[in-house]
Image (cartoon, rainbow, N blue to C red):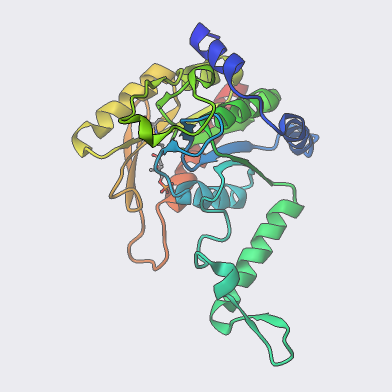
Length: 307
Ligand code: 9Z3
């Protein structure tokens, strides 16, 4: 591990639930005694960078978590077990078609003061509960939340190390929007920054290039998909290809902020494959054909690794 990465981990505030997370991960992986089950780690939502140790203010990265939540559902459908590493409060698998405040909007009182689902939401609620319960009961969905960049990287490392025994059957699908800059814990002030002190100068340092270590050291046999987000379409594909080469990703999914729900481009060593939402179908999304494509690529990768 390079020295920047080492110092990031050594100085990060320790994970509060490290032992519990570690136990959950072990159990989840052991659920399959053949060790032939495919497991994908889907990361979702943005990481925060706290500005104070007792954090009142933080810098955030944009991501609603829709991509990660929808992709998780399609991976489960395709037979994968999914470790869903998500930002607290972002979109969740199986409830993305429900209203934001589903708890208050989907239910009503009966005459006997019991609670029932409103007729208009009846099908959506039934499907969400049925599919979510089925995934959890079959042991194919493990949800692990994070908020800060410190939590995110520490849990990701634990996932990588725990899934290493699966070799090429493990996949990383890195849709989370990860901070590029952060304030190291030891140089962060403890208490709330006071506005009476005038304008604020903060020095942010670069987050160590975690993708390199993840790919080459923590999970060298796994299949890797990362995402590249840009707002300037002119530089998107070039930047995606640069990231693919630099981090030796098997594919990089390039997306532009405004059109990300309509189209993505999957950049591999030899191809640039444009994947679209099927506009003729109401309620369709780009994640459906995207996961279909990636599952096929993963199958080919497993086959290649076995020969
Ligand atoms: C993405 O590009 C995701 O597709 C989105 C999904 C965050 C745009 P939503 O959550 O949006 O459905 O609202 N994720 C990766 C973004 C990122 O931070 N990429 C880094 C980069 O572009 C590389 S890890 O440099």
